[in-house]
Length: 346
Ligand code: EPU
Picture 1 (cartoon, rainbow, N blue to C red):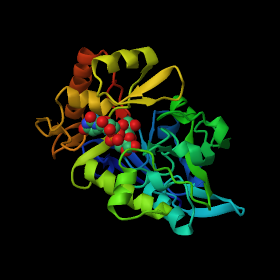
Picture 2: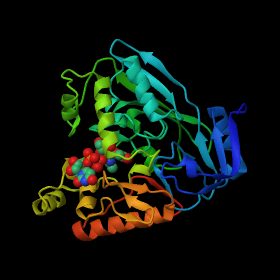
Picture 3: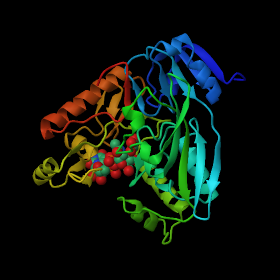
Picture 4: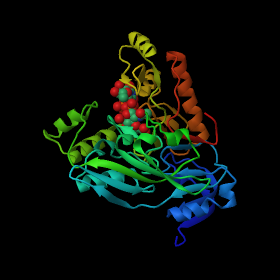
């Protein structure tokens, strides 16, 4: 890759998406530098056709083949670019794996990302859907995001307040196609500010006999909880949560809770709204462990669709639609995919 890029025609995508479904890209382009990316964006088959940028392939379902080029950003540098007694700003290239970034920051003694261990995907993809878990969202720690405008090749820098982060959402998602994220900067603290409220964390620490945990202890506890609940994509193809937790008006949440007192209801970004547990709704419709051919729902978590081997993206999408229809019928709540669906309209 000494020119900063490498290409492959009619490229297989099966090993490049964590669902492990078969698909082909007419052109696959791996890019290692922002300069090479600016060059690639001027190629007619990139400039004049719709193209796709893929991170770790962990939040995407190929229900069909992508029509244009698929670009994978490979730069993987991590460094501290600013620091004081209290904070440091860590800069990661888009191609750094998110989990590697979390571990790197913990090794430096920086606090903040410990609840976000083991999330698949890349640093560049993290701000797009504002990845989150265990009471924390990546957007809270974002100092700045640098993105390239595909039309001009110019790099723009967005401060946290300009990113419009919300639950699994950001301006980068809303303005899809206008930003190729090339670097992420996170502002992390040298002092611990642990968040142990989310169900299961305190119990896991107690079970491990830890009473004054470090950030690394919390990370280890959460890694244990995740491993128990979420299937490992290396063994069983999946893309984590298939659906977002639905956000509904508070009155709707209250009416549902009256009928279904066990339904978990969480705060949403706005006071007049509540977030419902999609996993609970799906579970209540009896889907956990279901299997149609090789497309299934995980035994351990109702929100996770799995590929038992040879399921196609279209089969997984068909199952997802049946799941969403059953939730709609029973609870009158609409589920929407959390991941990106390629080759079909949801
Ligand atoms: N539940 C069920 N059945 C299940 C699983 C869960 O009824 O099979 C209920 C339980 O009552 C549980 C509640 O759902 O208390 C919430 O479950 P969980 O703590 O696993 O969280 P989630 O809302 O299903 C979200 C994220 C996950 C993240 C976890 C932990 C979304 C769409 N998903 O899941 O993120 O790991 O919280 O914070 O917000 C992902 O985005 O890919 C992902 C895995």
